Length: 308
Length: 257
Ligand SMILES: Cc1cc2nc3c(=O)[nH]c(=O)nc-3n(C[C@H](O)[C@H](O)[C@H](O)COP(=O)(O)OP(=O)(O)OC[C@H]3O[C@@H](n4cnc5c(N)ncnc54)[C@H](O)[C@@H]3O)c2cc1C
Ligand SMILES: Cc1cc2nc3c(=O)[nH]c(=O)nc-3n(C[C@H](O)[C@H](O)[C@H](O)COP(=O)(O)O)c2cc1C
Image 1 (cartoon, helix red, strand yellow):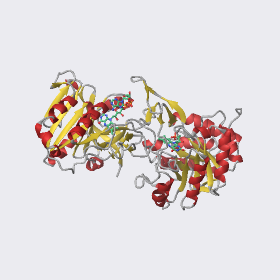
Image 2 (cartoon, rainbow over the protein chains, first blue to last red):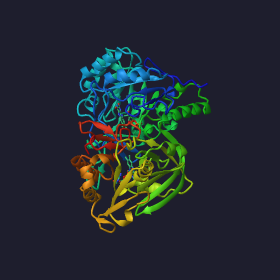
Image 3 (cartoon, rainbow over the protein chains, first blue to last red):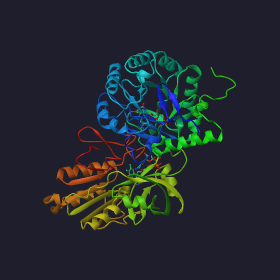
Image 4 (spheres, rainbow over the protein chains, first blue to last red):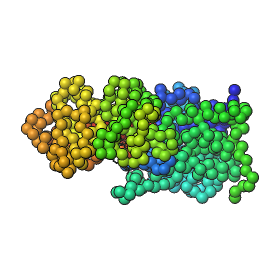
């Protein structure tokens, strides 16, 4: 029996494979389609204090080996989530990580307060890295002081595991991870999408309504891997790796680079069974390589010279 | 229930200029499908093209499902060169399908270009329900008209090579200004599919004449199952619905194209 449990902050995950925010709905859409109990955990769509209708169409466009999106955090709002979705999710034997987004620090705090009064939330993932909303989002995630303030304020409100989701659209992501650790975050997840763009040459119009959007999918995997490794080398904080993970080989690669757990995003759109296939692939890899504990892979990268 | 299967290609043939029809063996999806629904196809195992591509259910014949498509880009090019016997990964049936429970005697089908796609299947079911059918089909030119599966057809071509010279919207205008329809609009229901400007014009006319109308809307989508929230269609109350789950069939009174 391979030991697949990993610990992120206070959170025990039965295996390191999670589904990424915004790519799995609120977790209930796929009940009956895939075996949710097999997942290490579900990260919900970003929730805001009030429901959001999202950005005008077109919101998605395919690009080579990836896609651009500008959903604009369309979501049902935290209250409806608590009343309608959480009661369903509680029945599953998997971690429920609630992702939250806001345009003011007070709103992040208010959302957490409302969720603290309920049961069934395993951890929080704080989104300070959405490229598709005017206020908040990236403005927070690319500003060290704001990042520090948000972590500090939200940390005070909960003893649950607090994960900060970081953007790759900065020069040194490890500086941000360091601040997260200093302000008491339990873990960081990275990366959110990379700002990108595509133009229809026939109409000369951008392919998505907000002109730029967030690039995801296999196209960003090398970027994500480099960011994970940068944080792993420089900051002692658990890392959840995200970005283009489509196969179990991708997942192992992220773990070798230093990720304790991983999230599957865009690949769910092609096949919602991808995370389950990845879990069995990781277990097979461990068996074949005589690895008894998945944690032995984490950060097992072999490098001769270190980058600066 | 969404079904994911690996399906065998039974035929793949050109049926018009740059237009192909593929027949797939899929007992589960064909039994479950309703007219107006679609399937989402992974055309290759490669990472490019990455996402599945949506195609209307063109027809269902026993345990087989047909799609028809225009070659417009990477994925449709790959599909057009698929060989009989090859297997492809499909999910479906997706979306809501046409609402056939309304009270109407005559269906007015309006198709522009590849907007023909959902109608042979719809026609089949309407015939089973003993409805009258009038079909209006438009294309750029004769070689792009695919009329199999339609009944009582009037055609329009931009270049006048077959039927009315002009658009299918003009043809529709001529038809609906006919007295029967103006006098008893409630006996009719319009079903339209085609490019957005065409749908806009049809919706405007239906509003004016108080005609019950459903349109099939194409929006760029990533997952086809509601997970990504990508395929937003604006509603008349300023919100959004999803083409993949709330649609692709919408009542013309609900949306703002
Ligand atoms: C619910 C739904 C049902 C659909 N049913 C059908 C169907 O039955 N038959 C069919 O042929 N198509 C249908 N489509 C459209 C079809 O999905 C696209 O044509 C296909 O995804 C194009 O893939 P591609 O990789 O070949 O082109 P891409 O590389 O994605 O696009 C190539 C070029 O074609 C343009 N393009 C994309 N879609 C269309 C389009 N629909 N019409 C014209 N140009 C387009 C793009 O803007 C781009 O410039 C449907 C779409 C939806 C949302
Ligand atoms: C359509 C779509 C919607 C997303 N919505 C959110 C969101 O609401 N909150 C969030 O933190 N990240 C969101 N993301 C980012 C993903 O969670 C993930 O960080 C990113 O897509 C990179 O992973 P991937 O390449 O595996 O998709 C979204 C991504 C996509 C493609």
